[in-house]
Length: 281
Image 1 (tube, helix red, strand yellow):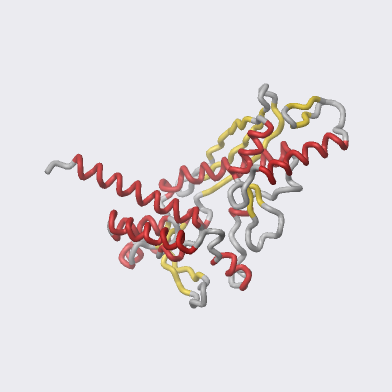
Image 2: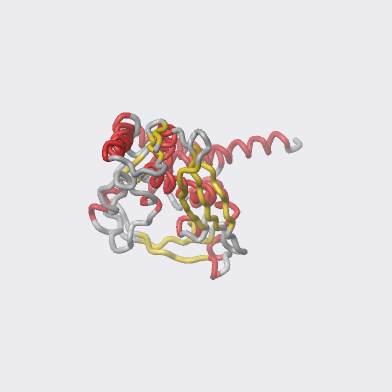
């Protein structure tokens, strides 16, 4: 049995109580002194009190114990579905195998399979088996409503699906190798809130909460959306919003999602500018 950078590597003898305690205490110290809530770990509404380990938190634990990830990708895609299963092998700084984790992601998951239709025309022109109307819960006192959705082009989410599969397998591997499952949960942020819980006041309150961000920062984000709308035009603006599953910027309650949508809109603006510069006058 050897100890390398705080991580006890088991050889033949079982770990002592002191060694187990030392490893757990180191993880707790990193959690308290280095990790930030809602960045490296966080609690998911309706999914219990145990914090879920997020990808940045897993990477912090990898840096703490000097671990390396070796992902092995299995492509299970078929004609109308992108699907990956990934096994991540965890190695120490010497290259010794310590353990592994598995994860899978598919374009048939609801958040990747469907997007809001850009307009009624797009919805009507889409084949019936690739469109649907879905009831969504109202928020902030607003009534429930139907949303028109169409199937997402799987090519648009292929890289996202691959990254999500890798993230899930890497978090699983880190929890396994560091024995941190009693401290953190995993994948809860990927789980949809159960339909029978979606309308509960405490769940809606959590969904609507703007977090620790100040009101003026929230207002600034809405201004950024407005500026992007003027920059790239309404058609592209609502197309990008639809890719993120929304019809209006005010529906976005997670600031990470808002910033990602704004970044995607900025990319559209850059591409439009490049196209205008290359087209003959």
